Structures are given as structure tokens and as C-alpha cells.
Image 1: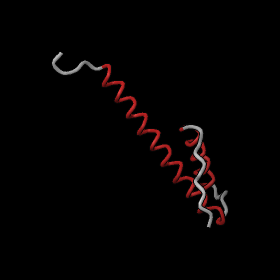
Image 2: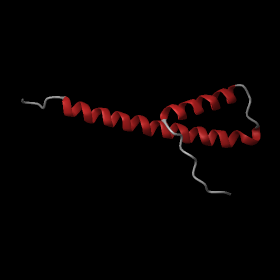
Image 3: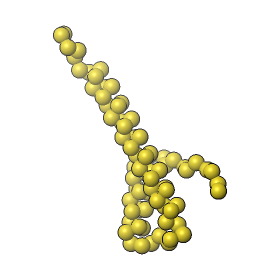
Image 4: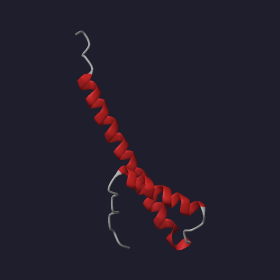
Length: 74
């Protein structure tokens, strides 16, 4: 069995679009049984990728908000 790391999408939007396509293919039975596991594995990777991007964006926003908020007692 090959042990290659999945290719990361270029952006959150690209990952989301690929996830939407996989979901559409699954819903319309466009994916053969032979490719089903591969597509599910890719979808799981994309979900994790999106979650990491969202967590980082949330952290970055919090840092900026903390910088512009006056500190207690000022």
C-alpha cells in the first residue's frame, strides 16, 4: 500500500469547492464503489484542512481584536 500524503488545496475556498463536488457526486451516485473509499478519505482530509484554516483565522482575529481593545483599568 502506498503511503503518500494527500495534496493540500491552494486555499479554504478551493477545499470547500472540492468538498461540495465530492458531496454532489456521492448524492447522485456518480462515484463508483471502487473509488468510494478514496473519495471519502479525501473528503475527510479536506474537512480537517478547512477546520485548521478556520481555527487559524479565529486565532488571528482574536489577536487583532486583543490588540485594538483597550486593556482593563485604562
